[in-house]
Image 1 (cartoon, rainbow, N blue to C red):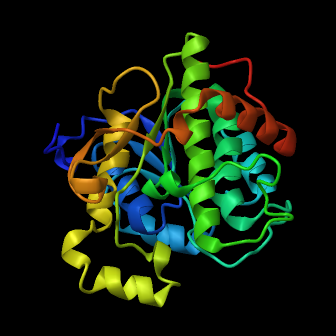
Image 2: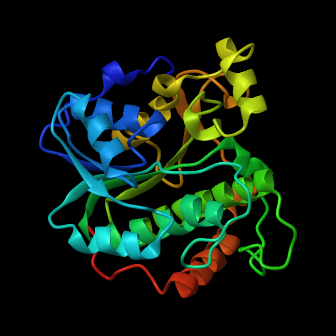
Image 3: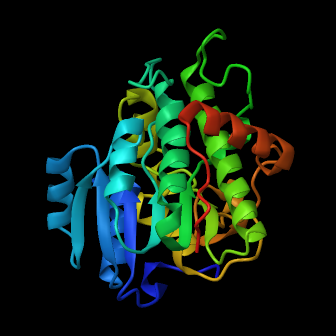
Length: 294
């Protein structure tokens, strides 16, 4: 387990996977490796041209579909157009440490992209999912705080890094709560959380100082996109313990290394807060778990 790599992926022939944000970075590597293992992979991307370019470099069966996870209209359209079984849903798309902005639905952009969108997509696609939903979180969730009174930064001051950490905590709380609800319903579907450690991707390219450090003197100490995708691939395909599961690198501080089962923050494991968050998000999006699940 400690030395697991993409070469250890099982044969995924006949299986279908959706990977959001698959036109670059960890999402692209995830799509590439799943397709290489035999899966039919749908690259769910905002920019179709970039998605098609990414898919052209992948060996295997791929399809490119438009999806902007920050836009509930786009999420609903994607889910409504889906037919047939979906074995793997990989909630990979995300943004990090961006200036305050509001989406068409009125949500703060990091909240919308990193949490609200994955909540909506997972819930709407759940009747089709047969195996796993993997949500890509971050160790930054340890620094997050739950504010159910002002989750959307309507009145409190906005700090980009804090908002990112909060959004990843919400995503982790949701993914764990979904796994508990699936288990209570007797479903075989699992909801798993993965995180890439500290990975060098274009997610932070808009922050030149941080990007320069990661691509420069710190490069030997952090993951590249191929390494950063390993926890996601592990979470999607390997036998994992029962109950909410958090997969990340095995090295010191879970920054780098081969994937292993780790431990999320205490806040992320708060079942009461997770239920309250689910109920609040369901009201905000007018979306709740369907009756039909596998």
